[in-house]
Amino acid sequence: MDIKNAQITVDNWIKDHGVRYFNELTNMAQLTEEVGEVARIIARRYGEQSEKESDKDKDLGEELADVLFVVLCLANQTGVNLQEAFNKRMDKKAKRDHDRHHNNEKLK
Image 1 (tube, rainbow, N blue to C red):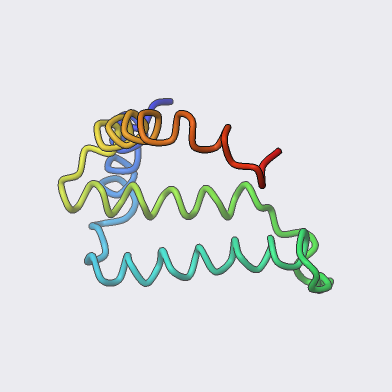
Image 2: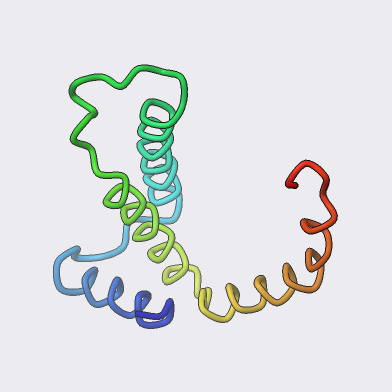
């Protein structure tokens, strides 16, 4: 599924199941919460913190999907075409960073 269709899918879900979008500030708080859940898994599973027994069955993919869902909500409710914005950003990064990472001694 491309980003444009993901935005449509989220919008349809909101209309069918969610009644309405939460306001932008609430969704920003939700996004922060979801990113925190991803950070907790990464820190404990891949970092130096020990993983709590209650966190061992947390699914990183599902938590990342929660982040994506809220990002798509925010894009929809603020009128952002995320597919267009993403494509534009990737073009900019490709031009700006084409040689930068290859020439970075730290990455060799």
